[in-house]
Image (cartoon, rainbow, N blue to C red; front, side, top):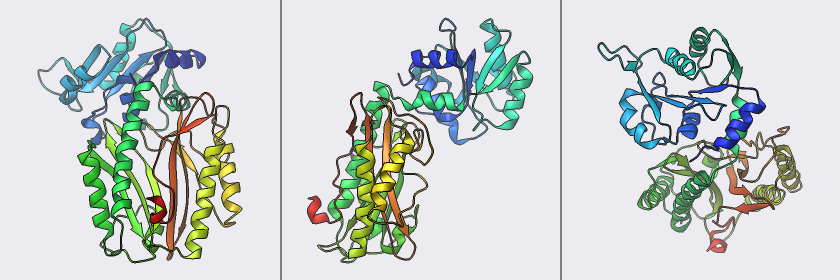
Length: 381
């Protein structure tokens, strides 16, 4: 199970919440264990989970009728109900008024008033208003921060799925490194990466950035037909997906046996930053402290190094807490996974990026990525 039910109940009691109403796709996946959401691409076709602080009260899973059989087979929640975004004549057991159905579930559990947590950073305003109208005796309370804290510590099942997504992503990364040579194109490298990951069991490549020279400075640029040349600096940032989880991996390398001194300087700064960030990871350290360690080390080599963030959590979303950014007081705990990342993008020149996934352990940390960080490919063999 992805959900840490004991911690969820504990955090809800700590926040004095009687229930949570969840509609954000990744929160619904986390609470339900239903990882193959088919309707989430249609923004009006939301699923809902109603979860209670009282462990004796059974949660409910409200799903689009198109997903009912698959979701019922895939979730641990026993009360699964069918919903629709439009009225279906003659289908009384398929509920069109989804906020009204949420209210019915809460009433069935015997609650007549109290505090209900909602996702204030993602719930559409219209649905919030409908919930408020359907639940007149209740106070709707923002619960985004609580959900971040809950999802940041990974269950054994989640760690297993993250490790597999990272393994598949590294397979794709290795395919790029092994094939890189003068004459091959960015698109051809990307195709080889995707083919390798799919052959190992990935469902898709969620993102696939391969860019050389000045194109590497386009942060989210798509691969082009540019063919690599001797001395080019190449950046890739890729993520293979499986079972609802996506890996994330970035490396930078130079084609050939020698690197331009400027490439070496900029890359050595971000490498020093990443390695310094990894070194300080342990329980009790804040995200801000990891950020400051990175930037101090990187700026000692390249004083112009600047980053909005220097890493992020990884789970059902590629970016989630803890976000490694200045001023973030989010405290690292054992069981969290943190992508330690640094980069420099110089328009018209090149892009340099490096990121490694780290698991926070009780005594420190474990690095979950294995691909070489070396700038020169001959040193990475």
